[in-house]
Length: 172
Image (cartoon, rainbow, N blue to C red; front, side, top):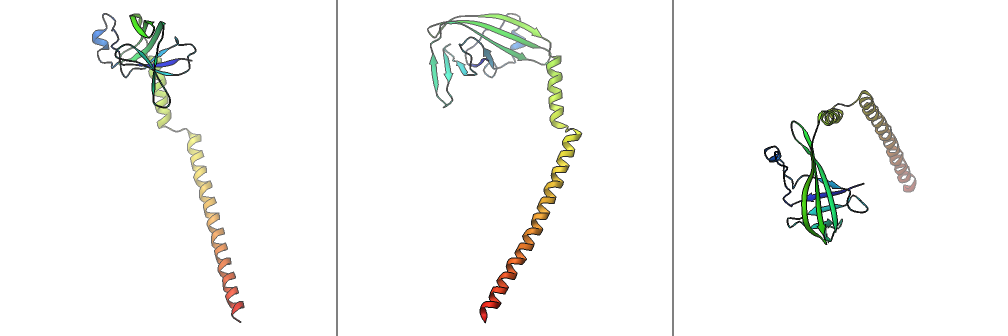
């Protein structure tokens, strides 16, 4: 498992990548970390002042006085290629002391784009079995609704007949 980190802190951009990464809004970029023990799919914020805050499920936040090395990483998705970007951040009693870029690696995005395309096509195009199942479901619900309508009609006639009999028999 891992923890998610949203960052408001201005992270350094690797040298030579300034123009390429200028399009990326790092505040909207998700980072993950395995540094907190145990990782539990918590959401943390790296504030403008460099402090770490745990976002609680009830909507509140709690400051984390972390001491140690925090490693965060994110996959930056660009048009041409993807980049794996990793940072090592040194904390002492909750204060950011040092930050460095530990990895900036170009990744081939052909496989990711292919899987993404398959998922989108799968959402748009339904398989033959899905269409048959929908048709059967429509037929089944129509038959059930039709039968129940007939039963309601017959029961309604039966009730009207019993009321009629009651009126006729109680008048005399």
